[in-house]
Image (cartoon, rainbow, N blue to C red; front, side, top):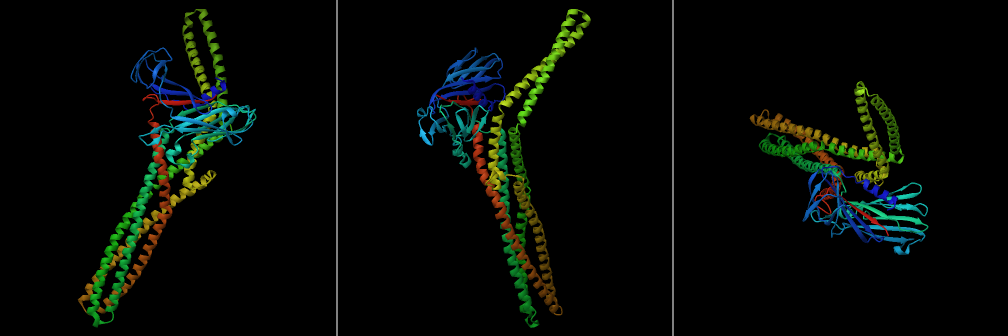
Length: 607
């Protein structure tokens, strides 16, 4: 295989480095396709790592097993027993099972679809569309198993120019162009999110002076999201639940404010009746009995209205307290939004460091410093070896302790050189994978951009900034402050109602006093009549105030809480779907066996 294509394969596999656990199992399916996407052959390989000596129990659906090493094994049904020597075990086999991802390739010359065999050495604009189809349906979740397809290819700058690729990046070294792109077939079908609609295909467009086919390498994995992403989605679900609780509390508060307004209207009517009765009594002593009856009826109506208003006030107060308690949970929303925004800004800073060469310069400096340190240690090692040889030739027993110390120092220097070599290898590896790391971070930031644009109601991702985030946070804080103010007003309203109840009791006592003697009748009637006028005026003010509160609560509910709830419910729908996809990915056990830790499908599309 050409060296440059081996490099592409290394780039693809480097972003899927497996974790190290006891008895780690990896499945790799190598498949070769023709230029139209028709399968020509496949090779299936399984690797067992981190083994201990002794009998190892393994499982596989493969037939006609072939061990690449020398370890002995026995197979019964799908169970395999290996005699392990402690080294990695690699074996191959056959299986009659269709691949989960199929590919279809279409070619266009100057905008017209053309067969590949008619394109050889042609000049013009070339468009190639790779359509990936997900054939792996998960019956348990009623969704397609999520796969990520990463492709890579190399183009010659001497004849191929103006190269573009969808869902991907282009890397140019001055002589050739490396194309990398990502597809996730079936992701739109699973989520119905418009931003994922074109992820079933990858389109490459370029101009050429003489067309020749390019080999395409594809790395496919079912691990679409990791455990960290799942935790973030769980946090999002928690936020949605808290906001819905806040919405329920607000609805109860609005309902209570309407009931209170109605009760206060009944109180006002009762006070008007009382005023009419007192006016009748004041006409004269001849109408005393009739006026007394009217006054007594007015008192009964007043007490009834006050009791009803008191009941409504209890409902109103409980709703206010519920709303106040839920308002404290708004802080959680603010914290989660700030975390998401900080992650977005940190990712952009990392990408800027990659683009301006800061990270690459740091890696280069570390490599240079490590080489200098290695030279110094090698020099010290030569000096110690010389001293040991000289002292050994003297053959003096008094030098044995010195020789022993020098030998210990030699071991420490050799260990230091070994660590420097390992650091150099790691630094070189990081330098080679820097473009793919950049592509992965950019993909993550695109998802965050979509969430923030929906929350901020933005059309342009460039408008995601500190100012707009502060506006959103201020709206949330204003909502919380408004709730606290309503709670304070509720307390004042309750105190006012209690004063009305106290006034009613005084009127009742006055009525008893009125009945005790005719001398106090006239003054008592006058005082009671004046009191009812004030009560009526206070009742009207109370009614108007409760109406304003009710309208204000409706405005807060409609303009604030409802909009926040609608937005979070939209996000929750996305969360529910993505949570299913994460569970499918996490529980994926293997294409060839039920106990696989890592699985990769490596496709090669070529002549």
